[in-house]
Image (cartoon, rainbow, N blue to C red; front, top):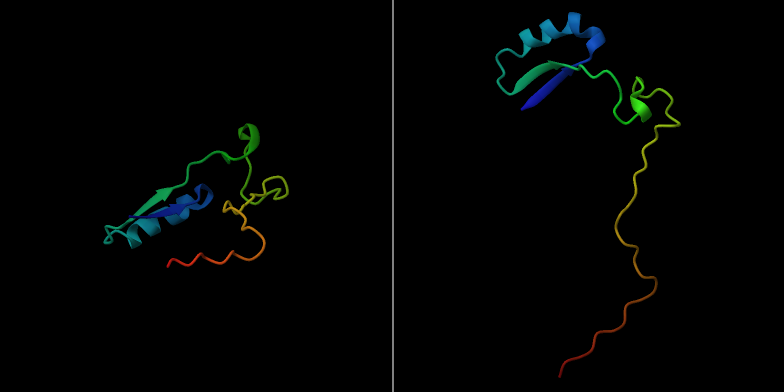
Amino acid sequence: MIYCVVPKPIADELYPKLVEHYKDDANVTVIIDRREFDRRARFGHPRAFGADEGSQRRIVRDRRRARVAGDLLPLARVS
């Protein structure tokens, strides 16, 4: 299933055109974005995506364990 999300400010103009365009494609559903605020924003204040990027910067960390420094010991021989 593919969702074509139309932003609310341009939904009046764009939504009917996209519904008509995708009417024969059963895998595409056109929906209108009805979110009122950014759920990641503190205290639910309305905020446009990308506004004030300094306070909303996401941190991506590598969660893999760091490798041990140095060479591996030689394997013991089985006789």
